[in-house]
Length: 147
Image (cartoon, rainbow, N blue to C red; front, side, top):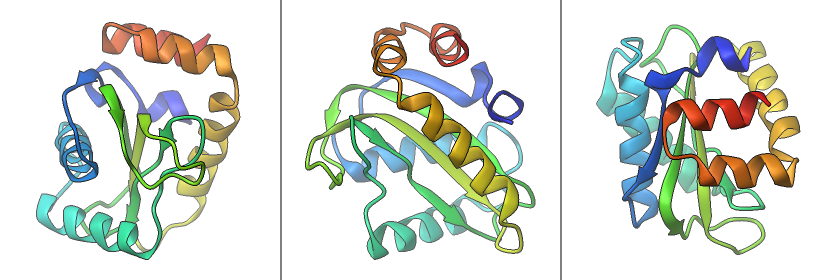
């Protein structure tokens, strides 16, 4: 499922964001490239509302901002790597550089959970994370995830 959703268009490296808000805005820009986000402002509001409930900063420099939203009719996912670590109120209190955003329809649960499960398994691998952080292009980033 991961590779059905993530492609070169939905990935970016070297994102110059310095704040949580800037990261989310950039990820929304990337998600909108899919052509599947009907209302960017609604997606932004729903993502901010989700983030206000609890931070989506995980561990090991990873954050997974996400939202259930009427702005999409099917699951949309994207990935971004920031140029420098960004504070994201992570569980382990460390800044993040690997960001995976998902936007899913409010009426669906299965695809969102399946995608997050697959990505969690892949990102447990420290070597993979290091390769992702060293990627110089979306193609290299996706190769690091696939290998």
